[in-house]
Image (tube, rainbow, N blue to C red):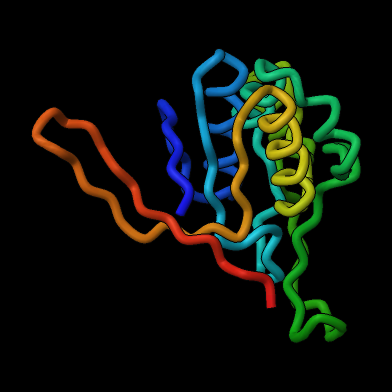
Length: 163
């Protein structure tokens, strides 16, 4: 059994956990991340909004994330179809790219929207968090936590062996 001490333990490397670890490491906080699954093959998000891009800009990774995403000017239509390759039922301009809304988005933020697949975003966030000092424990499952009378927490995790 390994025992380690850290100021902050982040559970999970989804966009929230990975961004939290990156921010904490950027500001010099001793942070460790445990993650059971890494880049799991499941449905994932992909639209990164303007506020999220502002945070990524502040953390110094906006350009790197933009390299793996589809730029805002290539986004636009949401299609409704009967199946993946089926007949188109409806099409609408979305993500502020239509002429009726683009001005609102341009005035709302210096950052555009970006279509970046969640696994690509997570990879950039985790890589940069680790480079800035975050300890990343892959294949590690959160089990439980307790708190003693002095309010000091203890968290139990388990390493998952690769099969």
